[in-house]
Length: 282
Ligand code: AMP
Image (cartoon, rainbow, N blue to C red; front, side, top):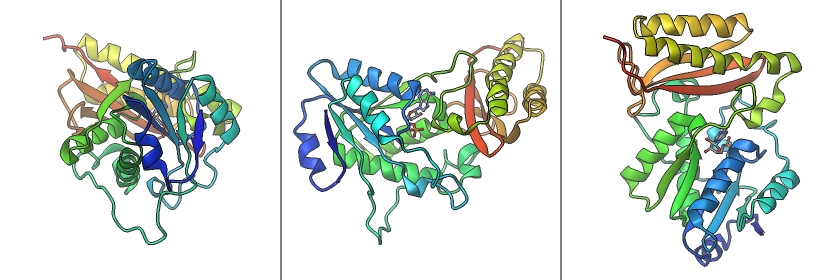
């Protein structure tokens, strides 16, 4: 496994790797969700192709009052995981930005709500760094998780609109045994918060069940989710139903809608979502 920490010769090195090159972009602090993406990348690359993992805590996707400084960076553990998974190249640059960098990629529609509303400039940071990684590492395929559903939708749009020659593959959210979505931020939860956090998944599963039943409004379903989460000590940042493709708010349609939620437990912000892929009963 090759580990590179400078963008200097990366383009030449990466483009010499055997095809197909499959990229898994991450911010490190790797967990079971990342491992699932890396394993999918290997399946897609085959034995002869190349699996590339980038590890970069991208400063421009963090807001001024967010957790950039305390974001976990367990570099040795991350490298051990990559090695164990048979990754061919880890790209872990210290920085990717010139001190006077001034060009950004901005998606203007899908980014408006949900995490984009709570975290202005977050998705511009994400698109910019993913665009840079695509240029530097020249992957044919890139793998992303559905936990960050809005991000995935935006990346697909970016690839379409800017003609990046990269196929985007997504993977369902990997969860702890109690349903909590795996996240690098889970380690910040206190014991009490960790015990309470699975309410997010439980309440979304209950919501999907209620939606399948059909004789209940989306508004009422969301109210129940809100109550459950708040009762468990969560502070809701947003809780919305959106169209699964357009990310636009949805008040009636259930089929192909997505409930997206962001919740603070203490200072830790967790996100999750569930697709309501069912027909309401007439
Ligand atoms: P991050 O390191 O948090 O920026 O995430 C890197 C990639 O891993 C993104 O495509 C995420 O959507 C994906 N990811 C993070 N957590 C999970 C999870 N629990 N299950 C599946 N994919 C995940």
